[in-house]
Image 1 (cartoon, rainbow, N blue to C red):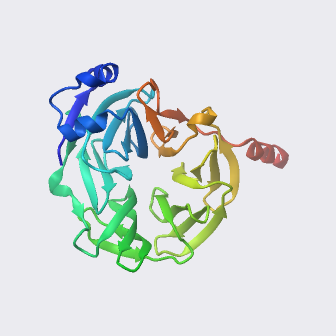
Image 2: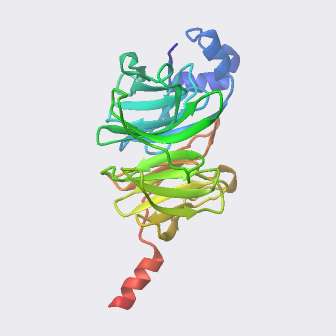
Image 3: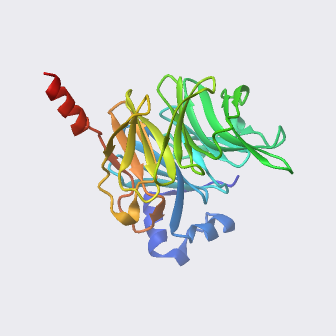
Length: 304
């Protein structure tokens, strides 16, 4: 891959003068960066002051917890999702590969020797991914000349397959997440408009239908899970047993409905953003600390 790194001041200058972009960038990357509207595909929280967003056009963006961008890197990839491995390392899915990146103090650098490539081993494309307890949970497709077979796979950091789940009732596995211990796995099914929870052996624990297409799913603390749905300004919230809870308000307007969402357990905060990032967005990533629903409070009052 060709790497192109720019700091915040260069981003601002490029956005003001798109015809005077730095000659340090490759022709392909420079042409791509003229598109000042980025289609975001994944979000992960690295630490309490560093949030990573990846795009369909190969950008990796770093944001502070205030929502402001601090760094941008361009790659010749099409990213589908991203997950954090530590406070300095992330992994992103792109086509047949899972690629690793250092997001420490030196900016963003690809760790090429760690790449997991499935192109020549069953032709498996990797879509969503989630890292927990030193393993990856991923949604995949086996590409053959006859059909696409979606499934869920558990692999280690070297790419060795630990488990495979083909679940007939899940037609289009979208995003994937889990509880902190990895024992309960959450999936969105965009084709059937539902959220599904399975255990780490592939058995379905519960399913919940949604009115609109569900996109991203994330555990929210130790007792609930949140889901972003198409055109909905609030995040749906469910208990770990699948019972609906009061939604999480995002304070976003109708044009920028929440699309990507990620929970950071260290400070009990949900970070979220819309699907499209415009060059004029001064703030893009937002956060909220979910509180207990009014319904739950009322129930406690009646019990006294």
